[in-house]
Image 1 (cartoon, rainbow, N blue to C red):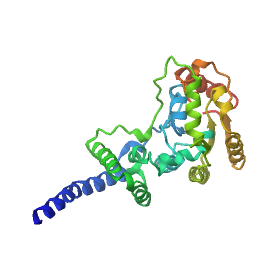
Image 2: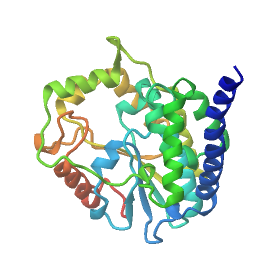
Image 3: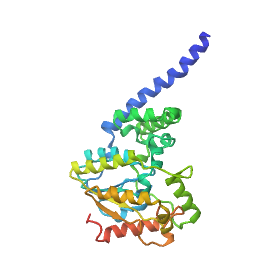
Image 4: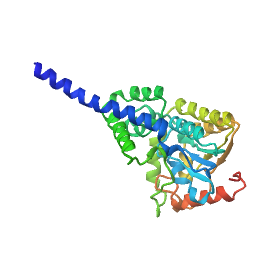
Amino acid sequence: MKKFIREILSFFLWPTIIGVPLLVGAGYYIQTIDPEFDLDTEIHTVFIGDSHVQQGINDSLLPHSLNLGTSSESFYFSYFKLEKLLSRNPSINKVYIGISYHSLSSYYDNFIFGNKSAAISPKYFYMLPFSQQLKLLSWNKSNMVSFLKGIGNKGFHKISGTDDFLHMGGYSSRFDKTKAVKSSMDKRIHFQYYSNDKATNFSEFNLHYFDKISELCSRNGIEIVAINTPLHPYYLEQVPTPFKNKLTEVIQSKNINYIDFSGLELSDSCFIPDGDHVSKLGATAISKKLLDSTMSISF
């Protein structure tokens, strides 16, 4: 019995001895020393958001701009990322924030505190305030092993200098010769707007942090522009009307500029199969339009 107890204690003791210093060390480094949030002083405009921004804005075509969009990034994580960026980069004077109909859906809650949180949130863990780190731990208690493994790996790679900065994002698209496919669009619509064949609710949590992003920019004298990237006409037609109305309501309630490319006419080859994201060709078209169109304000 004593041997069994010693084995149990040893099982928990060594991960604690190794893990706690790792968490504390990585946290201290990222919060105080890590240079990853120090951007080039030539960067005046940043693009923040999820994969729609990451795959849709080719910042190499936009002077003094940097795409920091990241796949599955909710407004919750965008807010804290942007807060840190603005505190350390006084050269930033404009923020483009990606928003679309899917951004309002409660399916996004799964990426914040639901069953997909353990896969998404570890990459943001160390940049968050301590109070938010505790929330992440609480939200992932049912997936604690996977979550702790994720933040442990992130901390190790950060301290060892091999971190890939996944949470910082950046323009990325592997979709070169693609086109929208009806079956893929149907599947995407169902995933984003329906649960058990019933329409999902709005994500009040995500909407709250969109408000906070707007307030953060206003408080710091930063111009904010909401941007809705193109959607394939078939996909756009299938978006439930309440979500279209809600987005209009959200934008009208804010005193911010809004660029709506959702209905922009593009060829099928400008989209990937899900019709919800643009391909490389589509990203080039959007980025050039942003640069040349009178809808955008000069960079």
